[in-house]
Image (tube, rainbow, N blue to C red; front, side, top):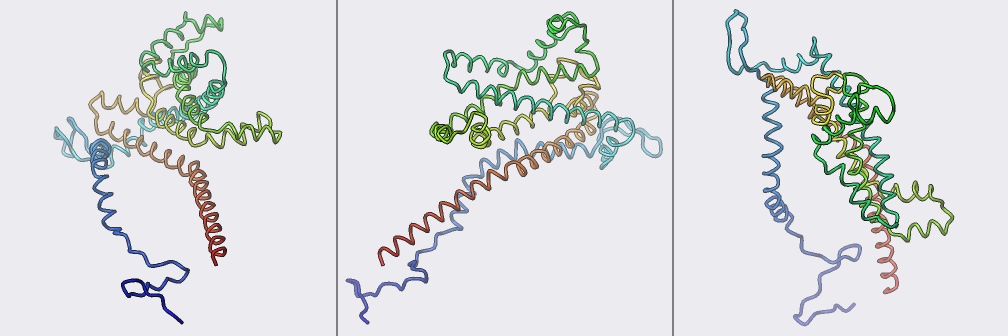
Length: 343
């Protein structure tokens, strides 16, 4: 059997099993060092603006300040380490009722407002997607509620929900919307949904504009109606943008403070949130207790975000993997056909 020799008199390298020739290995460690070097400024900024405040807040929650009495009855001033006493005080005694009330209000506002905003925002996006005269004006006007500062929006709705305000005149009843009761919850929900529904609507509209028109034309040819097109085409394809919008809104509502504080007022049990009681403790110079409330809220937000991304975002990752796997299979099939043809 003859061996082919190149011009320099050297025989070519034997091919590896499977038909692949030997290739030089890439410098993986060098690539990793370069990636770490390029990411170091971003990680440094994140550590300064995120990591340090979180660590400093947790440290503050382990101390107490002010004048206290020790075991012998002497007055102790300044900062004193108390360990987890600030946390145990939250879940025991009178503070436990305040905490669970604020926790329930925060969760209630998050579930109700985000649900209503999602439904209204998707509806707004579908309407703004239609081609009609004045569509640009409608899209610009939708931005107005979201562009108004939250404090100004709270003052506006406070004037509307007054006893002699426009809302009572419209429903022809005398309801104390800004008092401490369930009506104040409804007032906060209405004002919050009015202000932030355009945010979800705009993000969903951006996702809708990325869907090719050919998909809907093919669906109409197959006999799919408007409802089937929405559930089988629009909603699955706009899901990534919708999940991002809902996640941002959840994170925003979980730390709600300014709207209920301006619209209803502070120290109102019906609208008191975790951020409010943390602010109240800090305003009374109880920084350790305030930091403990803030740390618990941070953990609550982190858990909700993780579960949201883990449960709802897993399908997106799975679909991406399936698409990549399908591409690899098709590529391997083409390579196999080419190899057989050349053989």
